[in-house]
Each structure stands twice: as structure tokens, then as C-alpha cells.
Length: 205
Image 1: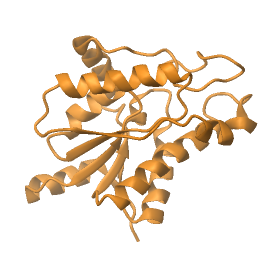
Image 2: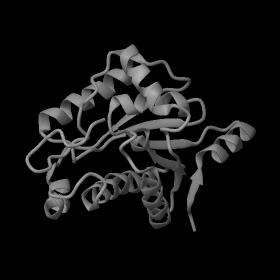
Image 3: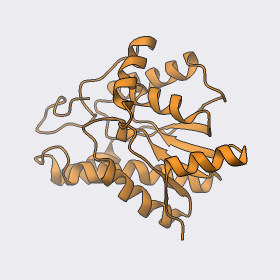
Image 4: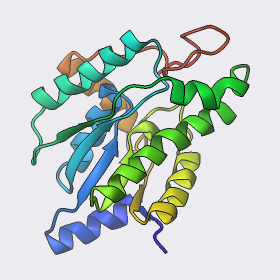
């Protein structure tokens, strides 16, 4: 059985072994990725996956992807961080969220969104031979790290690839992401991504 692994324990083991495992890191946006990449890059060979079919409209999705590319081009990490891209298809998310548009943030729409994005990450990590997968989503104070870790743990068992159990908002992770966003001049969106009640501003980052 493959389960989730608390990130601090994993880092201790990596420092002892001196071998950097491969990590597929789901990145929701450049600002959140900025801190997580700074934190994890000394310990992993990282590929950043931009898979976010929840982001609407299509132009907004392109804008956020471009910001992640800019971050990876400008920031200096101990090892090269590669970009993994998945073709945008917003219908994947709309189909699962159709019944939940009226729900507040944190309800079944968000759970389904997490399952979709982490599910694709786990599947790709397993098929491409990564040692671990993780997500930057828990940097946000609006995201439930316990729920993300629950979903990640189940997907780890399903696909047979290890999940990094984490809450990146701890140790001032969110504060550091804001600082790095200013340093690199990153666009900080004012909503998570999807529409709700026809609005594009129901979640604040």
C-alpha cells in the first residue's frame, strides 16, 4: 500500500541519503508556486504541472500559465525546474461542477475540483515514473490542507505513487509567497478560478 508522507519526514530522509527524488508538483498559479518551489527545490528534482481546467475564462488561464513560465525563467533554483503542460479543457471541470454552482467556497464543488486536478497529477506522476506528487494549493489561506491531504492520500493508494502530505501556508508560507510575487512582479489574481453564480470573484487569493 502506498500512502501519503509528511513532508518534513521525507526531507530528513532525503538529506540523509543525498539522492534527490523526482517530484511532480501541481501548480495552481505562479504566486503560490513561488514559495513552494523555493522551499522544495533543494530536495527534489521538480517538474511543475500546470493543469487547472477550473480557471475561467480561457484568457485568464493563459495569463496565469504565462506567469508561471515567467517565474520558472526568472527564479534561480538549485536544480532545473521543468514545466509540464496539459492542454486546457474547461469542460472537464464544468461537467463535474454543474450541480454545485450555488454552493459556497469549500463545498462539494471545491472537493470535486481538488479531486480532478490532483487526480490528473497522480496519474501523470505514476505513468511518468515520478517518486512523489504534490500540489501548491495549500499555500492559500482559503484552501483546506486537511482535505487536500485526504484526497492526495487516496490517490496515492489508487495510482501507486507517493504523495507529499503538507500544509504550505505554515511557517509563513503564504506571507513568503506574497513577498516573492512582489519581487518577481507576478500577477496575483483575485479569484481562485471558476465561476459561481455567474461571478468571477467569489474566491479571494
